[in-house]
Image 1 (cartoon, rainbow over the protein chains, first blue to last red):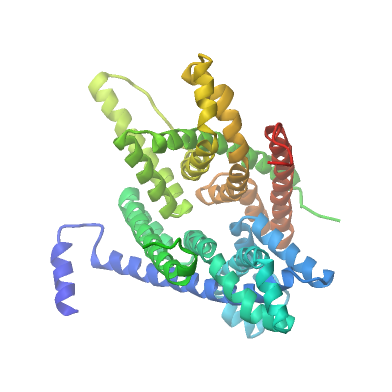
Image 2 (image 1 turned 180 degrees about the vertical axis):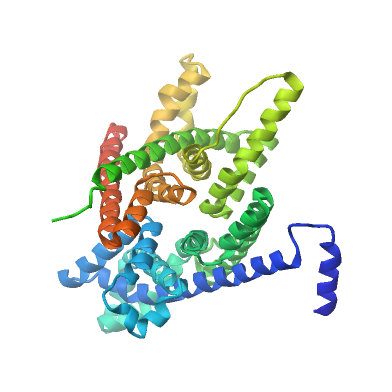
Length: 243
Length: 234
């Protein structure tokens, strides 16, 4: 570690912008971005499964509220949702006296809430599409075996729907990574926030933004690679047979 | 009922800016998309590679970062070019990159990459025999494009086009971050001044939903128009 730092220092010796300090800024930004994206994706994913099942429910009072939620959150810009929650929580009467304020004071939490609600809405619709496209024969076979609707859902529909949803969900993960750049608008020091800081400090737009664009590009490729690998493993039975 | 504290007209103006921005970006994106699709289908190695590089890079970088790069860096870049033109050829021009131009160019560039994929798939779905038939009738390449490939390609491209437009519409909100007075910017200023964020943000959200619903209706009409001749049996 020590030798790596000294090596970096000699490499950066005659570079006035990318000093160790600015690189540290980018590093912290990277951590914040990854935390924000990862947490919102995980929570959104967990919330989306019951929502997607409920979205296909026969009961209107379950189906329609979920439809309204996904329609509104998919139909409006994430920036508006972020503003609404970020500015909105401040003006809830008396919130500043409660313990909730201790959590909500940090812009990270409102941003996390907005991102989670947004990705949950998209993921719900992705899963819903996958559940709907389950072939009738599979469900009928489960019924013929005497499985209850709940068991059919758990053992037959959900596992196969998960697999079919994988490519679309990979896109949603990349979309979320890119959307997280707007966290910098509400003063969060994520990757884009770090780039804006470096730009403002050195007035070097190309250095600041091209560098951060390269980091995002690498992250995108990593996600793409991961999902392609996962698809290859989980969707192996759907590939055309060779040999 | 709804008290907008006199911000109503400015919000409407902002909505106008948003619409203009979205439509101009769409135009640029469609043009770039058509060029990209042709480049990707061409036999030229260079054109194919350039188009692939363009779509890969654009789709790998967040829209906000691209927008800032273009807005903050664009002026410096353009000044370098105009300075060089002035010293080399004595041509004196000045191009101002304002928020609107930066917004249109960025959004157009981003969605040009997505449109390229949409159009490529749609062009490939047009039966090759039809193009040959057109040529057999003595039509020129451009006439074949205008009368045969384009109208039939649109039928396949419309669903993708409609999706891209919906995403594009929402992306326009980002331009408020670099300072354009679109409806999001007006609403966030109004929220801070009146301390009523819910009122203004919900109004803006409703306007976005309204534009989205109207465009959905237009796309359904368009799809019907381009589907003429393809009945239920298709």
